[in-house]
Length: 359
Image 1: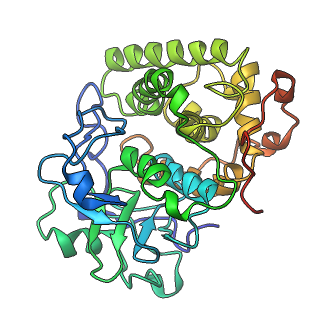
Image 2 (image 1 turned 120 degrees about the horizontal axis):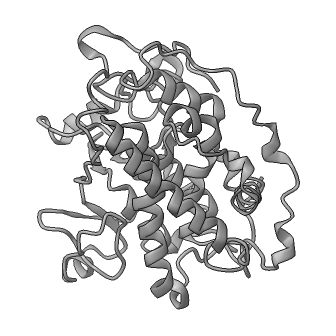
Image 3 (image 1 turned 180 degrees about the vertical axis):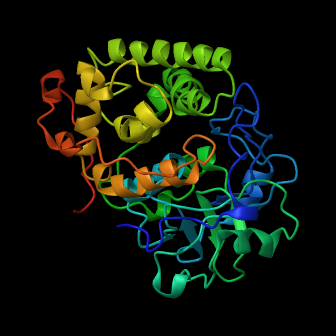
């Protein structure tokens, strides 16, 4: 799906200067840390979570955060197909069968400095929330909200106000707090026996890969870029070696760690290789990572959430600091995502004892 108007407003609302803000890119990880939980009182009694950047399990609320009750039909997930952080939530929602429980709003791929917009919907308004810009939903709850208007965001439909945009915690809560509404055969993305080993993997994937590509792309000096480039490829080489003997990051079944890595890999050749200058080689030139990425892409719940046209429009048009002409390249050819991956030779079943989501 493409945007009806792929060029954002310019002038006072240009994104120029919003992304490259210094020598080294540093991600703002301060989010609205409210949570939607099965038992708000019990969650409120738990100790506050550590500041990890990747979410936490077994903890309560951050200082000042509120607990909202799990309730089917009450909330709307706003998640642009172009955004890797939002893409994670769409994948997990689909894998767990929460599609009829939490509705989905889909902003278009291009935005100006103010906000994501619902320009793909009829009349340019979200059909459930009635808003033109996600910014309106932030301002309904926080009129002076001072930070970026980010996706994913969960909105309370009745009030129209934002509940949370804390993307690393959202997927963890989908797996744990929303268990009552999981579909039959939903996979266990957070297997207890693997969590001790999985947290360091998730942490390294986040700091060095998910965020690493942005550290390259938004670097404001040659020295910062060179350092970011070295860190990224050190991590990708580590993953290439790890996946030589494992079908998925933690073994023979898909976990939360795979969801978090996949959304970066899906965008690598399409945008990061050129747009963010992560160009030592393409993903398609790495035997294990490329086979692994195709294995996931061809698994229900993963590739069917990817829209390469929107992904390319978002990065090349929105990031005026990096691509001031806003020209979207014609390539690369992405048909090779459907090529046979051969990862079955490593054994395992993507969903373990569970089943894939419906087509």
